[in-house]
Amino acid sequence: MLIFIAGLPGSGKTSLAEAIAIKLSAIHLNSDQVRRELGLWGHYLPEDKATVYNELLYRTKRALEAGVTVIVDSTFYLASVRRPFALVAEQLGQKTLWILATASEEVLVQRVSKLRPDSEAGQEILLKIKNAFEPMEPPYMTIDTSNGNAETLAAAIVEHIRYGQKAGIGHP
Image (cartoon, rainbow, N blue to C red):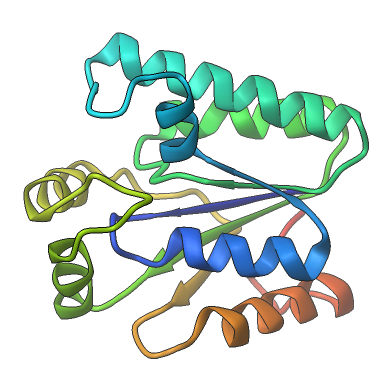
């Protein structure tokens, strides 16, 4: 299975992905971590972004081919970035679940205003990505992380995965 967690900077993607990965014994792949490992921290030219996403896609495919559940955590704010990941899942016959992590404007600003070890995004980047975020195609779940703790939200998502999906959300 391939689980995607998309959302704006500060939406709680990484905390949610980590909690779900623990509950499912899954691999968690994070675009910021890959960027750091490739020595591209602070580099956001189009070719740098392409390098990060190509590596993220490569790692995702390898893990899926090994039979491992994978959780990929990134803003995924552009449909053109989401598409290759969905295609790999389809080619490998993997079930997918897209999750859009959200939070109130106040919470987003509060979170990105703090120094975070797993992200460089501040308020300027938050606004830029928010304005450029392309709508996701259904089906997907929307999870508001404003008031919930990642463990509780992850438990609800795992319950959804294991015991069936609600109408209109989830994986095909």
